[in-house]
Length: 179
Image (cartoon, rainbow, N blue to C red; front, side, top):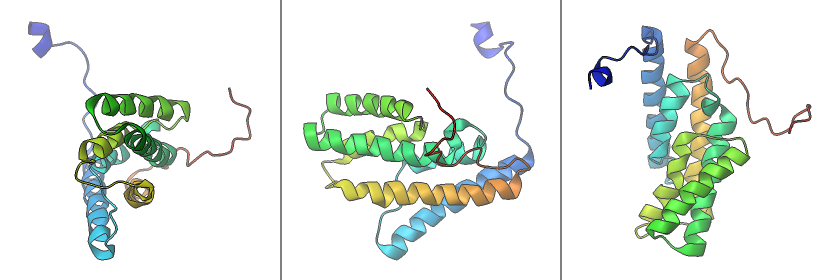
């Protein structure tokens, strides 16, 4: 039990104050912008998984999980899976669990893994009794919100960091043959 509290493993380095400020400003501006746009336009730009996306975009922005391809396509893929499962199978616990599993596999297959997006099928399936979902959900809030988060991350991450963000964009076409 002693090793549980007093382990010898090395913790990650403590973030610099500028990195903490970047995370604070990035998360604040992103969520405020999405909520504000929702109120101004009447369209929904916000959903709960976007809060977790902000953690990845601003606290670990050099991670592959924080790149535009992963944020945008990860959210689109997993929300699409959630909607398809809802329309085909309803919204019970086996369907929700299956949709999350399939969403993870689909994000891996399309090389667009973004952990917060794994919650999208749950958001859809657990709230389907109160919300009438259709495929426009993929545009508002999923695609529009994810694109706005990426745009804000581009500004904030390049304003505060010496390292360029993103490492890669959407990478739809590759000049190299990949397996």
